[in-house]
Length: 167
Image (tube, rainbow, N blue to C red; front, side, top):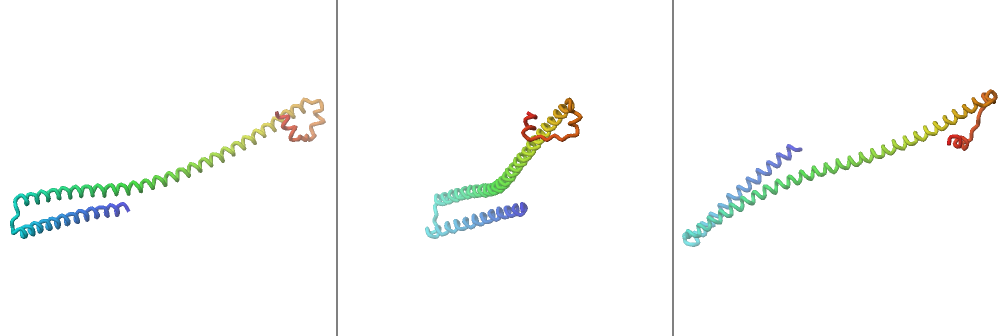
C-alpha cells in the first residue's frame, strides 16, 4: 500500500510538471502570435519600448508562474502531510481507545481481586476467632475438676455465645 501510494505520488508530480511545461510552452506560443498579430495590425511597426514592455511582462509572468509552481508544490506536500497526520491521528486514537479499555479491564480485575482478598481475610479472621474459642474452651475443660465427665461430651455453642466469647 505504501509503495503504491509513493508511486502514485511520483506519477502525479511528474504529470503536474509535464502539464505545467506544456502550458508554459503554449502560453509562450500564444504570446509570440499576439506580438506577430500586433505587428501586422500596426503595419509591422512595434517600437522598442513596446518590445521591452512585452519582454518585461513576459519575465514577470515567468516569475509569477515559478512562484505559482512552488506554492503548488508546497500545497501538495502539505496536503500529503495532512493525510499522513490524519492516518497517524486515527491510529493513535484507536490505540488510545484500546488502552483505555485495557485500563478499565485491569481496574475491574483489581476490584475483583481486592474483594476476594477481603472475603478471604474475613473468613480467615473468623477461623482464627473460632480456633481461639476452641483453644480457650479446651483449656477451661482441661483445668476443670469435672474434666473426665466432660471429655466425651459434646458442647453446643450458639452463635451469640461464640461471638461474645471471642470478643
